[in-house]
Image (cartoon, rainbow, N blue to C red; front, side, top):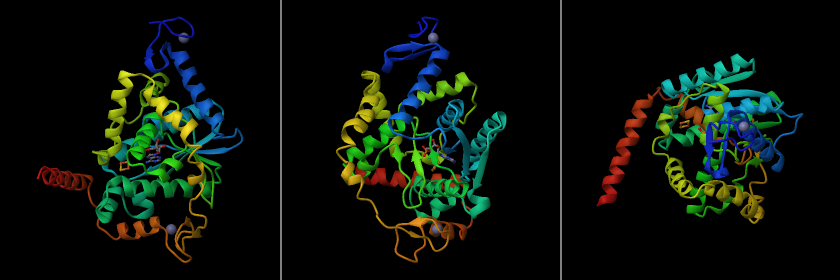
Length: 329
Ligand code: AMP
Ligand code: FES
Ligand code: ZN
Ligand code: ZN
């Protein structure tokens, strides 16, 4: 197996590029894909102050590493979600990464700073964990970016993530979500710009980046995301990818090239007016004098006694069993 670029011994095979690479040229290929995504979608300017949302997983640590390498001024933000050992460990990986490279990392803790955590919020809302989790993260990313004077927020969403979300949206023909599924969200109504520079790279490639660069990351998935629909969509796309390498990239990148422009007029019809939340000042789509969804979640969850991860998982497993039994009848 020889490297496509230097003909030296290759360490990774990439069927979707019909090529193999040595470590050095694999890293070069990854950098070029990130630079291309940033350039094609006008994601980040060299003078921008960048805030990278880091979870301690491979993707967000890799994107932070790449942006710093490429010369961007990139600081990190970690949100401690209070999901038991999983959160404690992922925080340790993130803090170690930042300390070893002398990078600036801000940590926001749901429990210490807001008086709740994701297991408790899940119990209170009665929804899937990712619902309270996603909303809390979005709010805190926006707030940290605005308070810290950052120009753009970066997340580690990769090609597998985006293709899976696209697949779900297309299965439901959720046209509004499809229209907004772009790798750049411009800054609007007081919300910061948000970008996804890893859309041209896969999960496997990001794991390889971390191994080659000596980055330790949390391998376990979030214990509360068990049974999440996107995991199923990823599995389906992986089967297709195996049969026909390159399918995932042509599906998602082809959507951006050829379908997203067709949907542009729908994307433009979002909420036109926002008002500041009367409690925290964050922009909200509600009427004048209203309280944002995040503040409402904090109020309800902080008043509830703390709930353990295990309790929420047990409940969701038994709910699934009931649903499975009901669907048999
Ligand atoms: P997920 O929603 O877990 O797939 O994560 C998507 C992206 O959100 C990650 O690549 C990170 O950029 C960011 N992210 C997820 N969890 C956290 C966290 N606890 N703190 C900061 N950023 C996070
Ligand atoms: Fe959000 Fe698991 S990381 S529910
Ligand atoms: Zn090579
Ligand atoms: Zn608020």
